[in-house]
Image 1 (cartoon, rainbow, N blue to C red):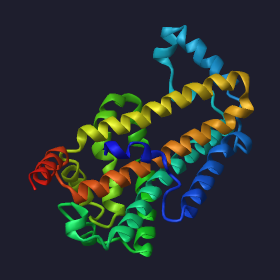
Image 2: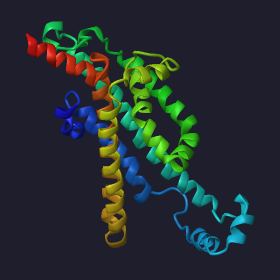
Image 3: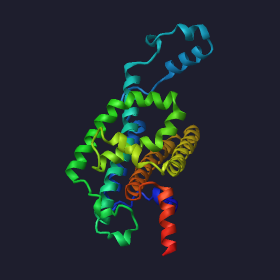
Image 4: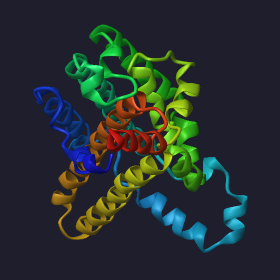
Length: 276
């Protein structure tokens, strides 16, 4: 995947590019809606004052209950709006991944075994139908909504563990949306296909995650000086990286299915080619 490192960010290269542009635009609208057309109440002054008092009073912090948190109904609606927008951007990354795998298999399905150099030629990996892909995207959306709360706690409190399992866990949508496995069967399959690819996946995914944190830092800095610019730049960065992540997962999944075993098998193929 070294030669494809920069190709991860070429998100417009998906078929004729129309679908990728449309997906980017829809995800961007969802992202900017949080700032320009927010639902609920964006005034969290009471909550900020309360939080500052809590940080300075240990006894108050130990005796507080969830009912003491000064969040109005409008504040909760706004938080739900923001959470839904972020979730939609992530789901757009999943959708990109599924469409990428299908498009890749449609384009490479005529490759011959002698020309491809793959252990499993692309022509033997059947692309999923458009209708079945749409149905599986709907299932992934429902499944993601159900898993939203436990996954949120994992990211907040077990961030290091989440980063460690991300190279494996992120392959679940690819396994399912590709049509290769079912909803349950995709769990063991995601572990199976990543054998030999964990380190390269960890490196490339860490690059995307680091870019996300750098983008968050830049937009936080801009928020203090040019808020209007930050309101647009932050969603643009988030959507771009979400689709880039989906593109990478689709790219590497196709590679893992065609050349199982990763670096070890790849090195063997290079040696055999050199001997010939």
